[in-house]
Length: 83
Ligand code: FES
Image (cartoon, rainbow, N blue to C red; front, side, top):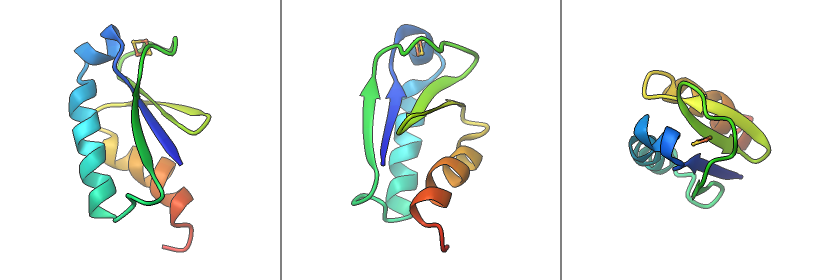
């Protein structure tokens, strides 16, 4: 699974760096280093009210307020279906 966090200007202003750091923490917390690859990407044309994050082909708007929920639904449920 590849997670890409947009670091384009609109997303950067909304805290891309914070989202990247929190995702790193979550990946480490759940020991997903071997199954999840975290990358940065430039604007993918979905600038909205949060930071744009893609998980494989799906696009999400992620903020500090919903990052745990996002991670659980978009990442954990897919990489660890039997949790
Ligand atoms: S700047 Fe992030 S989607 Fe456009």
